[in-house]
Structure formats: structure tokens, C-alpha cells
Image (cartoon, rainbow, N blue to C red; front, side):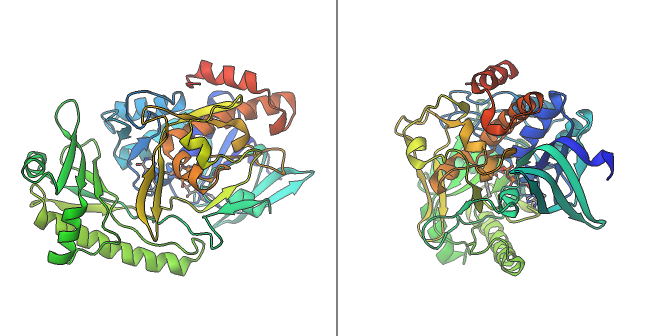
Length: 442
Ligand SMILES: Cc1cc2nc3c(=O)[nH]c(=O)nc-3n(C[C@H](O)[C@H](O)[C@H](O)COP(=O)(O)OP(=O)(O)OC[C@H]3O[C@@H](n4cnc5c(N)ncnc54)[C@H](O)[C@@H]3O)c2cc1C
């Protein structure tokens, strides 16, 4: 077997969670591989046009609650003009600059990237994962590791290891709706602000400290009107959001929604994408006709895949719950804070939020046990597929939090390799001290 395919840490999925784990582990001196089915790092950030980092701040935007690797990524993005920094509770950015920043950082950290490589099998013995098999145009490559991270979003490593999984909610495992985000350029921001002042029941705007537009909300009244007058084709009549990407006049829109029955069915995904593209075209047309400031706007592009909010989740030593999120739970083994509300895009009830009883400047903690996969000694489940119930995941999935889970997995992996132990034996107090020294806020 080729020696080059042996690593300390093998990260499956190069999205925000996987990047958090891989970049931190490489900074700690571990030999790291990222196996990624697409041709870029970033996951939903870059392939899915999720162009804002939520979770680094409380929902009110007043308090910073996640630090460490997130700061290194934002600094690098800023240095190449990809972001203008925090706007309220989110950090908007542009996708190509994010691709470049992540690629440069991975290169400097000597991380081995396996692109166009889909993990399709797992090799296990003595309740430890020994290797993953990545399928590419070359056929199958075995990639061996001491510790593994499932940051596939879909809990693929858990599923392929035949470990317990959770999925959707209720008896029929109903999933959150998926979205194809798209970018619009050429928006006259001053005119949009004027529209919001003249018709506050149609358009609401959020301005940043320089009085630039950071967010536009097309309110339900105008969405309903548009359906009648402009044949706007969208599912649901919720308020629709557009976020500034940090370049003036350029916005990303999350208005499209499609139901997801089986995310593994390629034919269903093709039909969903077709539907979403019709919604994109219809939205662009509606905005240009009905909202002041969009007269000269144009569709720039849309994401390269449909954005899945929730699919499969792992089962860990602890399952983060709705109760934990709503009641600002605290844990002895806390590894990251999260203040994002429960955000559901439900196929029947539409988009709704459940806010914490502690208010929008509060947070709950995610325990280490929620990222330790049950039934195997050396696997972490982080990001979108952490061990949480449907509602817990609907909050904890945001990308600032995903980065925080990733950096915790990296420090835990370092300890496991040094002490030759499994994930359950990690000294949590030391893990927390290490994380604080690295910049984590605990
Ligand atoms: C439309 C939409 C809007 C959202 N808005 C926001 C927002 O504004 N801010 C925010 O912070 N969060 C937002 N979220 C949530 C956030 O995008 C996700 O929860 C987040 O991306 C989770 O990161 P992750 O790394 O766990 O998963 P992902 O970003 O899904 O990354 C998983 C990666 O694994 C790869 N992969 C999957 N399976 C395999 C395999 N078998 N082999 C190899 N590679 C594999 C994928 O290609 C991907 O790169 C939004 C989500 C959606 C869908």
C-alpha cells in the first residue's frame, strides 16, 4: 500500500465543519487529508452560495461567541477583499474570494486535498475506522487514518459504517426544504432604501454603520401581491431575504424552496433543480418590476448545487435537543457556543423561527459528547450532521458553529493520537484549556 495515503486525521467533506477540523489539526502539526466530492473547499459556502457566516455572534449581533479558526479565515478573506467584516449577526463574503482564501490556507498548511473523490465505503475493525474508500475517475483509493471526521453534512461515514443515524422529523422523516441561492447585481441601494421608506409594509431594510444596505426583506404583502400581479412563482409567501455580499449593489437571495423526499435520489434532485431554476428566473423578473432600485439589476449566477439544510444526522454520546437550544443549556464538557435560533424551512408550515427563552443575546453550549460518534472509537460527527435532534440541528448547523465544532475535533484528535486513546477517553478539561488558548470562547 502507498505510504502517502496514511494520515493522522482524515476529514470527509471540505465544508465549513471539515475545514475547521482540518485547518486546526494541520496547525497542530497533524498530517491531514480532506476528501471532497467536488472541486473546491467550502461546501455550502462556495458550492451552495451560502454567502454569510452565521453563528460567530449571538443572534442580536452584540456578542462574539465563537473564536479561533473562524477569525483566521475571516482575516484571510478580508486581506483579499472578499469580505468587509461583520454586519450585525453575520459576516457576508463573496464566493470566489472564499474559494481562493481556503485554497491558499490549505496549501500553506500542507493539507493533502483529494478532490472529485466521493467516499463510498469505510473499512472498520475492532470498533475503529481504519480507512475510507474514495471513488474517483481513477477508481477506488483507500485512505488510512488514525482519526476520522465525518463532515459530509449527510453523515455518509456514519451511514457507510452501519452506525445508528437520525433523519428528518416524525414517522415519515420529513426534511427541511432545500434552496438554490442566486446572486443579483446592479442594484441601486439608495432607491431600495427610498422604497422601504415610502412603503414600509412592502420592503424592510437593515443598514450597516456606514448606512449601506446589508439586508433587504421583501415582506409577505409584496410577495402575495407579486404572485397575483407578476405571476411570481415561489413556494410559500414568507418574507424573502436578500443579503449584501459585501460588494455594493450585489445581493444573494435565498427565496427559492423545494421539497426534499429522498436526497440520495439523483432524479429527484434533477427535478428539484429544474423547479428551483424557474423560481430564480421568476424572482429576478419580479424584483426588477416591483422593487425600486432593481430596475437595472441582473441575474449574476446561482449556486452549483441545491442547498440541503438537513439530511442525515449521526448519533453520538449525547443528542443535542430542542430543549437545550431554547433554554440556554450549559454543559461541563462544552466545546462551542451557539446563539442561532431554531430555523425551520418546513414543507407544510413554511419558514419559522423558535427563539431562545434567554433572548437574542443569549447562547447555549454544545457538549463534546455531541460530536463523538457512538459505537466506534475514532470518529467525530460535526457540522450539519452532528448528533442533535431535528430542532437542535436546525440551530447548531450554522457555519460559525460548524467551524467551532471542527476545531474542537482537531484538538481532541491530537490528544487521542498522543495518548493512543479513543474519543471517549479525551481529557475534556485539557481540551477546553487548549481550545481557549487557541482563541475559542468558552
Ligand atoms: C440555503 C441555505 C442557506 C443557509 N444560510 C446560512 C447562512 O446564511 N449562514 C450560515 O452560517 N449557515 C447557513 N446555512 C447552513 C449551512 O450552510 C450548513 O449547515 C453548513 O454548510 C454546514 O457545514 P458542513 O461543513 O457541516 O456541511 P456542508 O457545507 O454541507 O459541507 C459538506 C461537504 O462534504 C462534501 N461531501 C458530502 N458527502 C461526501 C462524500 N461522501 N465524500 C466526499 N465529500 C463529501 C460536500 O461536497 C461538501 O463540500 C444555510 C444552508 C442552506 C442550505
